[in-house]
Image (cartoon, rainbow, N blue to C red; front, side):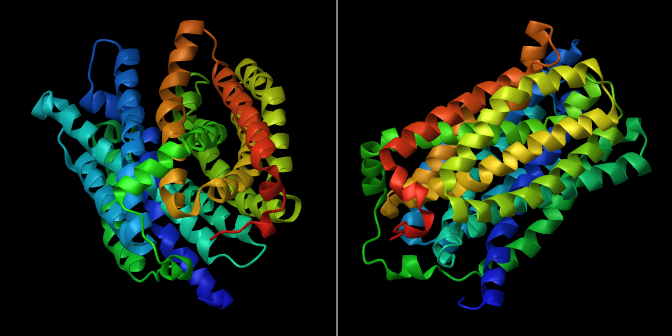
Length: 430
């Protein structure tokens, strides 16, 4: 994997599964309203939507378990083997959601099976991001680690764009009634068809030279003990990740619901905005990852969080007062820039601060805890805050809180290990 072409192929092979994982998560978020009517029918549209979004968030509760058990498997048996296992589990969850009949046919078994599908997806996703990020960090060329690792997040944006374009097409070809009855299943079925292709691609991955060079492979017990000894670092990493997960799910998975229910825009308008956000994210992430290789991680992390604290709520308040397609696009692209700036530096920084022997587990656990407690519940939390505060701009409050946590975590982690993170090219990876 020494040549540029070889490195490019290696990046493509490892991020392909990451693409599928995020595609599945996005289509659930996009069609949460239709899923609510199919599997969670109640007398209250708000209650149905909350049940649907809570099921979306429940998948994230499995991520910490996946991070520990699958992360330990990857740290012991290798990056390649572990990432093939996560792909298989992810596929099983997707098939369940795509094929389970609705509540009218199966009764209470229907939402329970959908919940099981989300839990399987969450368990596998608990280590997917960490496994991919660590793999990219370990194959990166000197001084370009931020650029390499940024492709983990960039692949997610390709999934956002693909899911959004698919939604635009379906809304063009099918009526709203058809979309609500069966059209929402089409993206999940397409995800099922993609699985065999990605499985073949991922099986062709090579193990990282750094992992192969290791003489000691930790057992599950050793991994758990090491994580316990470094749990303060994991909690710091968790706080660092919260800003990323909240901002990402706010500007992608939640956008169609927010645009339709709160701004009263059409499904098509909201999906087009989401596609544009995905393209914007895809551009900013590698750009800012490479920029962090030049100036260090801390300036980007601090700058993005400060800007988010200063502008998130005012921008959402202005949008709510002046709802339109153009204004939604403008606000979302601004938040996309903040997300790309922050995440371009954050993901690689997280790989750098974790102990080498348990790098995958530590990274995955920090990421999973952040997603399980805050990020994954962003659509549900925003819907709830809007309802109880009677304030359609309330998602800006949620994002501001996440940015404050990200800023505090950055200052604490850089105070304790700042020299390593300030000079990323000097970090010892192994």
